Length: 482
Image 1 (cartoon, rainbow, N blue to C red):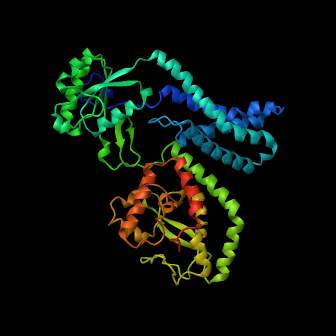
Image 2: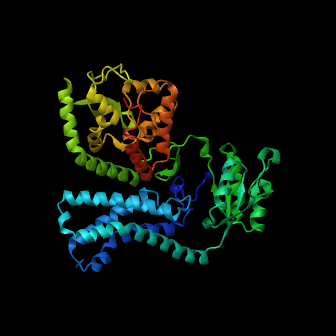
Image 3: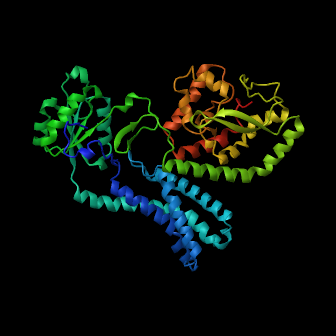
């Protein structure tokens, strides 16, 4: 952005519209896919009902279709179906559609039982709909893409581009453009003032000349797009380049080298028109926060309903096995480092939760016989699904540590408190990788924290369900659970 001393529109000189462009897919195509995918998923129940000879004009089918449309719209987005950077394979799309649809089905079943409407629907229609919808939606998704790009390719020409500056970021951009033909961009080459021994060899593209030649080359080669990949330390040079291009019609993009930072959910945003780049942020904002919360509620409700008889038996066993309370309430750090109470079935004869907390060890004399079994199978953590319903925890997320351990490790491990930008979880990426239980050396805790931050950096609903499935696989085969 160039700030001039006098603006022709003084009331708007500090207002900038920050828009987001989808380069992996055309924005219009993505918009249509969002609407049509949700429509097909929700409306496909009607032809299925007609096949079975059912009159579908009944109002409760219309209500079901409307609710499904809203749920599918958010869930398809949450599992990353419309991700912009790469085109997903057919198999990957089918997996994501199926995962999203399973969650939608669970939400519909939950709502149906909650408002006592589940009995009014035909079982065979619902079952056929539940099975057929993912494939029908995927076919619609691909059909929209195919038809739109047939039209798109007829109306839009290939854009020729020049990249200013040779560095890791610009090389990455060239590789991305090369392997994604749908972007419709062809890189003519680079401009850089440095000698070849400083820029390094080019595996893709070639050097066209110096930066001073940019306006001339832009006109001669009929360049449509300029990518500026210079460091922010060369701010004045960037401003001069933009000024020099004002006599052309080329589109100009700046590549901020945010790769210098250890990014957590980096994204472009704006604060009332002022552009900002988020370098460290929670992955759960906007629709993602809503989807995460809904998935937590559905999973926690389902698991508590399914395991309530087992939890009752465990509660009786804890009460009879040793004196003390059934539930042990632990002080832990939650979202934004705020203290929360975390529930567990008591597994020890003592309840340490003060300034000194001794980690459980193998053959710990404080552990009761029943407590050893509960800890080894992680059944002592079942009451934490109540925490999930309360909103203080998530099903998947970084495991909460004792407050005293938090204060200890935040001084020793760089970025330790970043893990508290999300709610703590009952299980997490670190746990399914084996980083759980006693930490004898600092490196073990560092590895656990690295996994937590990796989870935050790469969060998706698909990752959540992968972690959940792996949790069941390692539940009864973990030597560190004691």
